[in-house]
Image 1 (cartoon, rainbow, N blue to C red):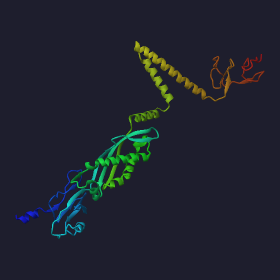
Image 2 (cartoon, helix red, strand yellow; image 1 turned 135 degrees about the horizontal axis):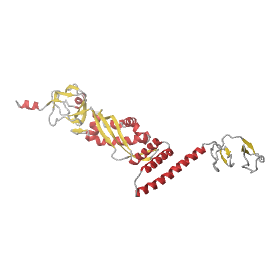
Image 3 (spheres, rainbow, N blue to C red; image 1 turned 45 degrees about the vertical axis):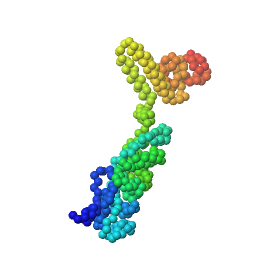
Image 4 (cartoon, one colour; image 1 turned 90 degrees about the vertical axis):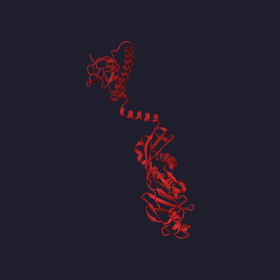
Length: 355
């Protein structure tokens, strides 16, 4: 092989990139000191873009396809003078391949709690995490704003910046949405869509698109979760008074079934007395409630002692005699007060009735 053949073999004739990493966003084709030959073949696969940089300026951007590099299909390179010595001469240029596929399952999360003002619990601290997906939509902006002259740019090189942008957007969106802490779990989808639309412009600056944003979980402080559990329990219990009576009855049953002696017996008796008092109080309240349910203002005189009782009373509260509900009444011979038929004395003025 002659010297001219050796020199000619150094010219790059085939330019292509096969990505097997899965996380590479940008890759600089290894031109180094070699030169690209006029008529070289450029292959750009689906989900790729090829960017030519000539003398520090971004020149042509090629989408998916196969190209023969010459002055006809590289107008910007031609304008910049890449072919100034004629189309048969080689030229030097940097070639960057940009991966335009979606990079999925990227993680985000709050490293520190996010403060939120809630109508039910006041100021609460929230932690959240989830996943997101990105895609390069503007290779020029990616090289200018983020990658620069990096020969190998991967997702880990930009994840830190993107995570901080996402957490900041999440905090703002959470405050603007005004969703109550109790309703957050049922609004993950709505919150995710709102945050994604809110951060579109922020990602566009980097030449990226936020294709997906998912809130997987929002966790509340332990004390707030405990308060929520108590509120749920109270909703299940319903009537607190009836629940207390039910618990007291169960406790009395357990105390009655406890046949242990010694100190356990004393403790059981003490607990039994305490529970008995509580039960008695509950029963008294229930009886008073039932009394209050009687028609107000209606009274009835005892047919035996003449004491005043409630109209629906079955027995006299003074002498214990049975009340004759619905019995016939007669007026007092002196004061005219209504008296049960057969009364011997008036319970208002004390006057003897009849013989």
